[in-house]
Image 1: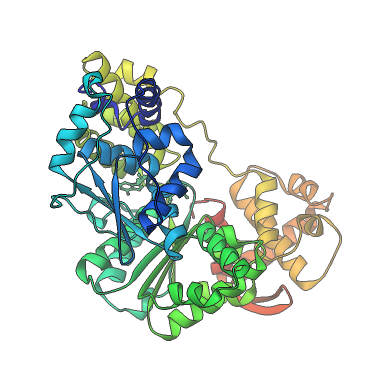
Image 2: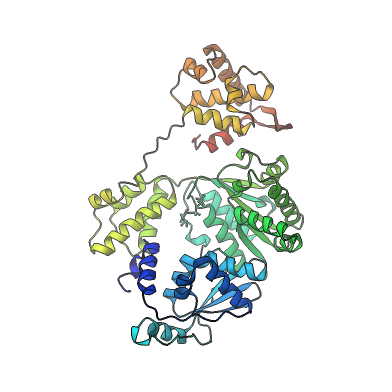
Length: 497
Ligand SMILES: Nc1ncnc2c1ncn2[C@@H]1O[C@H](COP(=O)(O)OP(=O)(O)OP(=O)(O)O)[C@@H](O)[C@H]1O
């Protein structure tokens, strides 16, 4: 076990699988009889989902109890807690919700007596006796909202590019500022959006335990909505979401093609907003760039603060590598830190992954990580991204911003919105690629180079005059400063301005 423990963060699933297959060979565990209590129903749910063998291994001997909106799980030790937390937390939440009919949080209670039993349990000599963990006084209680883990704002490493996001998250926790409501984070994968959402929920709860805070992914929101509709039980669904003080919804782009859920979400949003409660959202794109969002939803999303999450710059990436390495007990030289920070630049998640890889190697071989070993170990993670956006991406993204199709931009259509979108796309191509005017014309169905020159001049003039442009977005008139339009499209393309 001592050998396994240091590696848990690295290939935990493999460790679990090996451990499971090892323990499953032992026929030393009796089934707990399932009765009709909520706890038994939760266990039945688990049994149904993971099958008898795994159930016997992980859950049959555990005591559980429901308390208000929490399912308390009595575990023999923190190792078991870690295993369950990493591998079965979502399933436990599901089991709890399916029994109680509403969302429940999970709290783990480490029980000293159960610990002794657990030590005996894996010894073959005791195999014939089924053990049951007796009830005992809890010594550790986790009490955070469902699914938010241990994220907090102090663990979020701040640099020039994510300072704004961190500051907004702090303000959201500490004040009732209207400025930050709703607070909408958007950006590419692995840049810390979920971290901030969960941290806001956790810290708000810590500061004020009487507040009702909820973190949920848009996918779970949709599933709960669909289930409630099928069960004709919208009242409890609405009560669950509309009575909260802070609602954090992750991955809202998931709602894009789900009109029914969007409608319900809009109503949820309105009722929370009217009650002056807080809403925090995260998505992979700017709200105006998510296709198939209704106009009313988009206008609500942009009514507060919309903040782009970006990959931290080199100096902050270095800080992230240093801090994450030191938290894993890994000591690395400055040249290794710099190599990792310089070469893994796609997401913080990958940066974390690189440090974990180095840490795993260090633990396995008990050798210092040198620059050349780091180069070898993370060679598959080294970013191979070309930072220049391609022409097709620029045309598609601009078309989507204006809610027209890319083929309309390539056509001869002269409608006002199409023509404005085309000019903006031509301007962006000119500014961000090496394409000549005739080549840009070629990207738009063979337009003449003078048409491109005119379009670029027109946009430049509008920018210089800080002019407002207007267009029709899904039939509704919109107007915005040209600079803001260019910025939003550029942000979605990850173009630095
Ligand atoms: N600035 C930061 N400081 C410390 N850790 C960070 C930072 N940014 C991201 N992370 C860590 O990187 C990992 C990925 O972050 P997270 O899951 O929040 O990304 P995300 O933007 O929500 O990604 P996705 O869109 O794929 O869900 C997490 O472990 C998170 O704690």
